Each structure stands twice: as C-alpha cells, then as structure tokens.
Length: 249
Image (cartoon, rainbow, N blue to C red; front, top):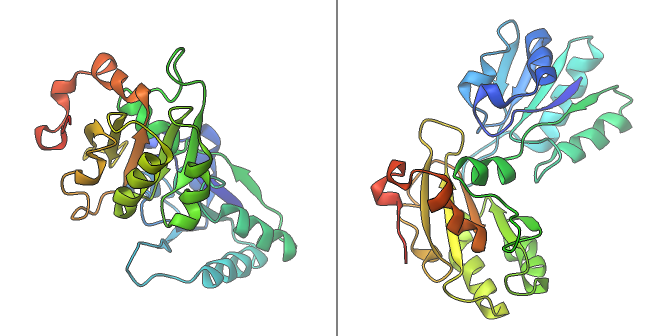
C-alpha cells in the first residue's frame, strides 16, 4: 500500500519512486485533479477516480479508506494517488492514520506540491534575498483555515501562497488589507499549473478580487501574494502569458 504524490501535473515531475509504484500497482485510487497522463502510467492497474470537487457529489472519505484497506488485505498492490504531496493540504495524513490503525503496512512517496511548483513555473520564487525570507502555505477553503494565519502575519513579512482559495479570493485579499498590507502589494494567480492550460494573472492585492474568469473555470488556481511576484516579469517572457489573464492593476 502506497500513498503517492502525483506532483503538480506534468508526468516528468513525478519522482522515480512514484513511477515505479504506479507501474507495479494493481489498483489506483486517484484524485480528480491528477493529470490523465500520470494516471495512464498505471497501465496494468484498475483505476478509479475518488477525487472531491467543490459543489459536486463525490466519494466519501470513509468509503475511500474502506476501499484501500479491503484491497490491501486481499493482497493487492494499492496506490492512493494524491495531487501534489500526500501530506500537504490534503487528507493523506488522515488516510495514513487509518491505515496504521487497521494494521496495513504502507509507505509514503513524496510529490512536488503545487504550492511551490505553480509559482516556480510562473517565474515566481517564493523566497528572494531582500524581498522575502520565508513563505506561508494555507488552505483557502474558509476563514477558519486562512484567517488565523493571515491575521498573525506582519504585513509583507512572508510570501503568502493560497491553495484552493479562488472562491474566497475577495475575502482573502480583504483579510490581508485589514491586517495592514499595502494595497499595491503584488499578487498573482497561476491557473492549471503544470498543464497545457497553464496561464497566469498578475495584479495587486487591491485587484486580486477582480481576477478574470476565476469563478467560471474548472481549472484550479494557486494564489501568490508578495513582492516576489514582481519577478514574474523578469524571469519569464511575459508575452507568453494569456493576454486576458494579465491584469496589472
């Protein structure tokens, strides 16, 4: 039994160990946002999507755990394929605890989290001498997730990365502004990182809530706030970004 990180999207960003686990698997239970190219690497396995998407019917977490345990007890080589890294803002740790309680041996295969990969692919380093000496990664699901962390940060003291926060980008921006962050603090949203649909919006904390099409697209988006976002124009060919997605404000 393996909890495997699928990385941010591109198959060649998988670890060698992750590929080996997929190639050897009998059963793969994968998240909704795992790329089809990565799932296809498990070419001898039964493959089932058990991912959760906001506002849609999905497989319950208890059902996923029962499927893993039952298959493992039957001697099948099971891979639970999770987006990014299994232990970063997902339920990988919960699944590990359940497996341990059931007496199922397992290993964890780390993956490249989109919290780091999405900004990097957009030419945005999370740290840079003189701009940011650290970064914070938070879930944007609700104020109970991001609020306590954002309200504890000194303005401009770290790069802020928000996963799963597009729907709450207005509130996230407002929370930082109320904390004292400057309205012209650079901000970006990286849509569909590590895929052929990748595109980048850049603007400011003041304009973050006006991100074009953010509520109408199926693609996930990674929000980045901080001075390091200004390096996007230096480290990439800005002309390659989708024109409609570039929104300097």
